[in-house]
Amino acid sequence: MTAADAAGLAFLQGSGFDAVSIRAADETSDARATSSAIGSRDAVVVLDHYALGAEWQKAARAAGRALLCLSDVPGARMDCDWLLNQNWIGDPTPYRRLVPDSCELLLGPEFALLRGEFRERRRVDARRRTGRVENIFVSFGASDPTAETEKCIRGFLAVAPSGVTLHVLPGLANPRAGRIRAEFAGGSGVNVLESVASMAEFLGAMDLAIGAAGSTSWERCCLGVPSVLVQTADNQAVVADGARRTGFAEVLGAAGDVDTDTWARFFRDRLGDVEAWRRASEIGRRLVDGNGVERVISRICSGV
Image 1 (tube, rainbow, N blue to C red):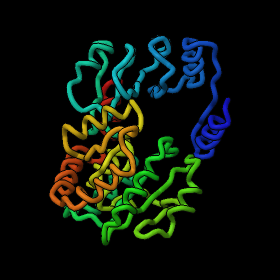
Image 2: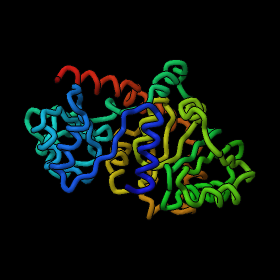
Image 3: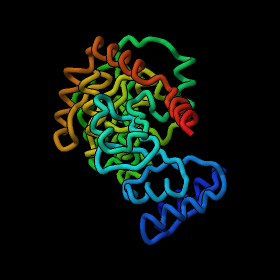
Image 4: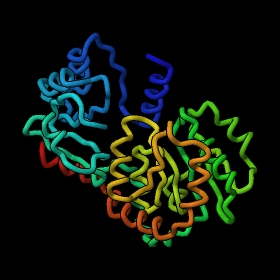
């Protein structure tokens, strides 16, 4: 077990979950060990793991376990009762070809798995946004391996738009976090954060969010916060494509194609497009209402 795995296990156990570690020689043995660890309890197994494929899934179902699989993109065949991809917007055919006829597809951001705080924040703050941008939240995830944070800040400082503040949150696993704080904290219009106590409350106070084209896009949509996205990994292409087709966010491009000058042009030419941000906010709110968890649970309960 790696140090990161051990830390994750300890976190789950410390949070009150009954968490165990399983070591097995192959996928079938791993699935059987998982079923054994569950014991006689009625349980739906949720699989979110790139390395465990159809062999594991078939063994788990053979042991009598109902199985929900999470997926990023259509790939290999899957043997499950439900398949969930909250990022998939569009034709379900690529997935239907990969699963048993009995499998129910849960596709799209209506099934987005958001924490309850986002639904609650949406309930208490139902205002429609004007599209005017004064406060921008910048977060490129835990580690930001392609240094998108620095590119964005430098592009912002090159333009220095009047009356606009950039609120930057370097990820906990970002090895350059200290350097980012040392270089940019206290800069004109830049607020480098140590942490955020309530992400839903903080994000809800922002006029625009900048980040990767990942699952946090749905948190922004739920609160009606328009986004600017950079695709920082191959599996984010689905979200980026969905944003282009529906208009819930502006996609600046893939990480390798985005540099400081790209951001400078954005802050100079696009930031003041009030109508575009207002429209993106409304599209996002229609896509994601914060009830995705309840929908998934309802589908599971009606199928077991």
